[in-house]
Amino acid sequence: MKYSIGQFAKKTGVTVRTLRYYEELGLLIPECTKTNRRFYDDSHLSSLQKIISLKYIGLSLEKIKKYLNEEVWDLRQSLLFQRQIMEKEREKLTNIIKALDNALAISKEQKELSPSIYVAIIDSFQTEEKSKKALKQILPEDTIDRIFNISDEEQILLNQKWVNIFVELTDLYKEGIEPRSLLVQKCIGKVYDLLVSFVGEDLSLITEIKEEDLPQDLLKLPSPFSEEQQKWMDEAFEHHFTLIEKKEKG
Image (tube, rainbow, N blue to C red; front, top):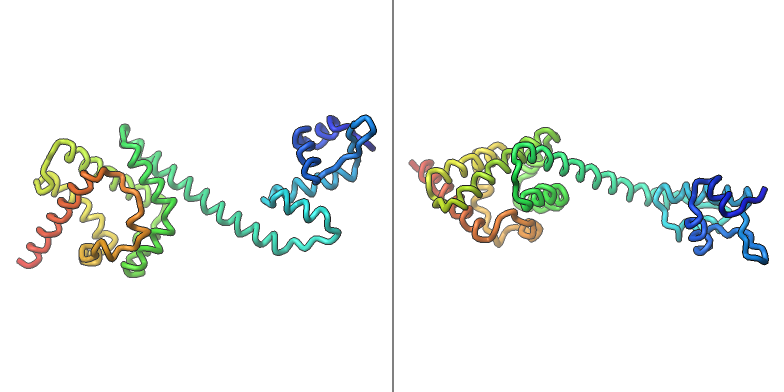
């Protein structure tokens, strides 16, 4: 049985525009009359199904054309490669959903939040593997596990804590409060407590690392703070750790 291009499009659920595009690429070529009318038959149905199936698993139209021209398909390597690509896509989508869940959870507590904070949260998921690899150069394996091997619920709660603290610090910075003041130092103490929960009481793992020793991938990570605010926070942290050292020495 023969079908006009309109009938074939209706029967297969593929648009006329797509059928014309497949014809242009040499993927699905209909019979043409002298008056340039196009007709498809049942053999075209079979070919179109193959195109749709291979397109569904992510193969390019160029590769599909190659397979359609072969009598025997050696698809195994292509399917294995395509599966690897899909696994990466699945991982990417999972991380995107996690990032959205974290950003949405934080937006419930913080109605007005700097866009840079949201960007930092989303970027932390996008660059998680890169950060993990970089941190392995300066931190023990068990510390890396404590930082990254937590549940989604724990991740959301942790990010909420970080954001709440940094919003508080940003407000103090905007008010012009000195980084060595009691108010700022109390806030830095909350950061210290969170760091201890991952690294342990001995924070020398972090405090004794010099900037020039940090992996470049970590240095490239965007900061949600302005350069001036970052300097203000660096001074606050430095003063806090100095006080801890003095206390430990008695």
